[in-house]
Length: 103
Image (cartoon, rainbow, N blue to C red):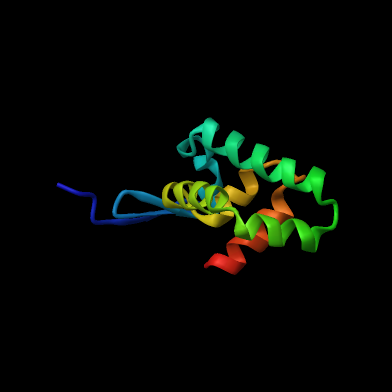
């Protein structure tokens, strides 16, 4: 039988129906397979190297269906906030902009 309760802790975490939500959610980084993160970071890192201008890099990344597919796969597992906190600071701004464009 599922856990139909809402539980809160003094650290600001909560679980609803047995699923953790709230501030502590960023601790669920292990839900994202490392190879997904590595693929996203590698693909975006290559674009950033080739197009140091952020606007150009964003336009190129938006046109790449592989990047959209990878980000969709990751955001199916975790929230965009968790994704942004998991990736390297180098690609974080580009990921934020891509997620804003696509969501």
